[in-house]
Image (cartoon, rainbow, N blue to C red):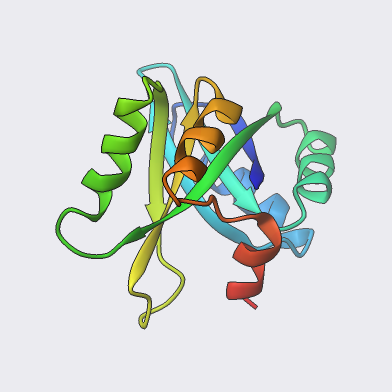
Length: 146
C-alpha cells in the first residue's frame, strides 16, 4: 500500500530543476507525479516513479542527494467535499499530515489521487482502512498509467 517517494534537495537557483529531469530522461524513467517546494536557499523536489530503485541509482550516480520516504496514495472523489471527507477521517484519527499533493490519471478520471506524507504512515493506513478508504498500492497505481 505504501509508495516510495524520492526527495531531492536542490539549490534554489535557475536551471537546477532540469538536472534531475535530464538524468531520469536519459535513464528512461518516467515521472508519474512530482511536487516542488522551495525556501530562499534550497528546494525539495519530490518524485513518484515506477522504478524508484533505478531512479535513485541514476540520480545518486550523477551527484544528486536523494532521500526515500514512504507516502500513501489515496483516491479522492472529484466533487465538492471529496477531499473534506478524507481529511475528516484523518483529523478524527488525530493524524498529522506533513504535506500532500495531487494528480489525475487521465481526462476520464472521476477522482484525483492525493499523495500524503504522514507523521505515522501505519496509523494512517489503519484509520483510513477502518473507514473503507484503502490506499492505492504501487501495482494498481502503475497499472492505471500503462
